[in-house]
Length: 576
Image (cartoon, rainbow, N blue to C red):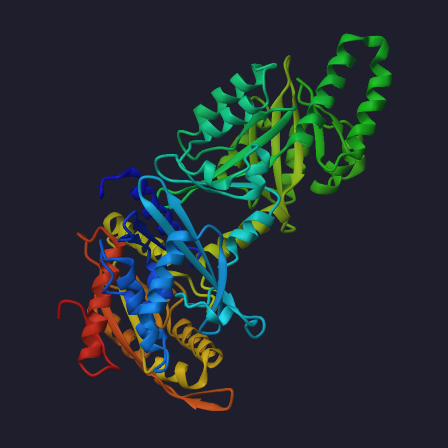
């Protein structure tokens, strides 16, 4: 079963759900455990180190209920287990239950050829549990700021598609489904975007298929790698712009933006231009129509002639680029306009590639799209479309809000909501980059794994609200002790990590570890409670032969456990 591609896909899905703090566990048709993700142990810590491939589901439930039931309920444990097994086999719809002050949502899905996959997510209760729900006994744990992430992605206007290294779809959001005519999110899983695109056109029935074949050729050329944005036609004269971003683990995130209205505006402009050239007698009428269209557009538009003269520039372009009306009314050359903007520092924040392109013929000789940061903080998307016979049409779109929304989504995906530190996944990416830096430049580093001593009794005695504030305080202590170049993260629970860059000697790393122990060991006051905890720190030093970030983190974790075994509140370096 280990080579089963479906099971491999389930494991990949589990890794993806780890980033959303959603737990997953898969069982075969005989109700034996097959696979689970890291978040499963955050929800159900009693299973860590005990669950194994092939374990019967009833044994899994027995271990859980032994922890959950009180002395009066324990004699009924077999009844709860039997009911839990039956519910596991028969569940067809999601349901909610209360667990440790959280509302837990559990779903179960039968998978052909495998068995059944169960997923859990949780959120804090807004009010006391309603009558009836307390009779459901089901595992659940962990407060998560990312629990509603899928709902967040469903509410954004653009389609989102997540693919693995094999270019197969792992997840899509609701706008993506609407854009490509899907009625079931699960139906997209495992397919390629090529399959989805073909299906969208096939569902539309017979008709003019020329746009489909043109779009299919564009799609197949660009989906080989996460490169420049590309556009594909959809049924009913719709258009989608596809923008890809590849993660360090091979996962590729695709944003699908509906640009139908923009393409229609471009088409109307092109039609107006052709009509003006083909019929001299109608030139004045078409020019008036074109100017009216341009002035009503929410995009800036400029037309540059074959001789390099800016013949047309609408009001929106003047506003976006803060160009003087008198300058543009004089029909200046593009070189003159670019020199004016350059002298004002307009391109100081642009990439060197963009600046070089603008110096070469103003970037008019080829189709191109790029984002240009402006000095006022806005981001303008500039697109140039060469015109047959010479010259070009250039559009300017304010994409500041869209970029900010993308940044917020990235921040949510990379940061811990409670402490605002990097999460485990983002820390491992930073650590892997540091590993590569050692091999390229020989710049050493140290990894410090920090585990709190005495946190659980504080959490149990004063409650999760105090515990959360204590974790936030620890995060601030770590951030203050770290240098600007260092990276601090919360790995989960009461475990933290720090990447100390630019060090190669153990003494520097050891002294930092001692400062962390001392900083965390200081007493603090939270909600009128004077609280003091401790910390055990494990350290591992970089080496030129270290290739894997996960391996380095495991070694630091091992050194931390040695520190705990040595009496807690101290620092141990791996291998010493």
